[in-house]
Length: 480
Picture 1: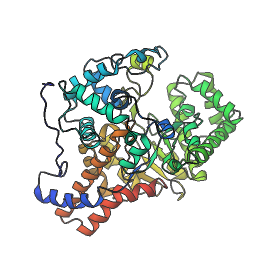
Picture 2 (picture 1 turned 90 degrees about the horizontal axis):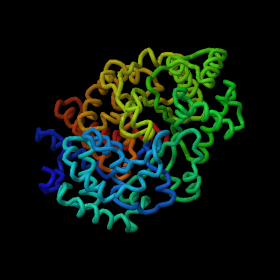
Picture 3 (picture 1 turned 120 degrees about the vertical axis):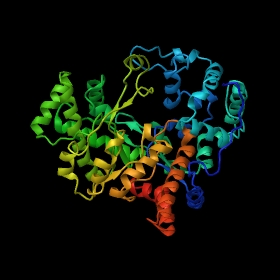
Picture 4 (picture 1 turned 45 degrees about the vertical axis):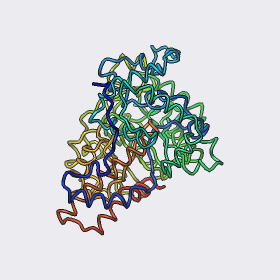
């Protein structure tokens, strides 16, 4: 099956519709917005790429190792992460092990199993990358694996494939990386006085000093105290330290947003005395799971108050059971493709935060979910009422043509388009960014075309909305 060489062809009207009338309208809308600049306001690309602006070493290091979408699928078919050369950063891992992995053998293994990605968003993104970025006309398979590998490597050493040159090629106007609260932002500081500083910014993600269930929480709060000169065992000192780090990210990384990857959307509004008691338990390592969750919930409310003060947009990404595979976590560490979506409640969970701050026009919160059942029941009504709330796009496991379409279907009638924020790619795989944004643009144009066909909106409105969903809303929502 994987030895059969097929032509790699991307249909110009892909993802529009099987209905020729809808496809024609979608095509007209898409052709008007397809070349608009890309705003990537939330992602996980490596900031050193843009500071050092070095060529990548090989196809494996660029396209396989950073992309947990890719090695997650291969792992599900029994291919070990050791075989794929994934770095071992867990407490029980061997940090030097991946250095001995042969990138050619890894690429061949990937090509042998490329058929696994048929019908998946990853397969679509990879095909688009291979065709549009590298110019391949045959689909990757076992038989042409080394042709692919050698040709990609040949192109990677050219000046056109340096990260900043690729930003120009992809028409990326701005990209935001994401760093933890303890990060000193050396790469963002290094480009501070360079033109790249206008295009590469950071986002502040304080999970490392907010999530008391982390194995390194106490150590991290000690480090936070060293960085800020604050007593992080004292509730007010702890909050002051986080405020200080937020300002550091604004000044040194041009941050416009924060990001919070909590297991649930729970928020709380406790007294200062209760907060100190919770912090004491968390620092002593004796907090129960419920107390750790309450601490995270209180911190979401505290962080919302900080956003009102300093203007940073607040992104809340709940609903992932992270590091579900304990063995992989112990050996390879976080973000290795073993996070699983979980059922998430928002209406009651967010009430303490919204009761305190939800009507403040200075607060801007972007909500995400991995639980599609709450789109029409909870998220759209919340965003359709509270002026502080906007809905983030279909995210992660739903960052797909069908997922994006379901999102529009289930949220638009209640929240409208203007209570959403466009698209963000949330990726570590830099070369997939144009393909991901192209999918979103195509799906949105299809949805708008169907509304036109049903006489729910006219073409003038559709053209305006296509522009806003592609470019306008994201710049406004993230204060860019």
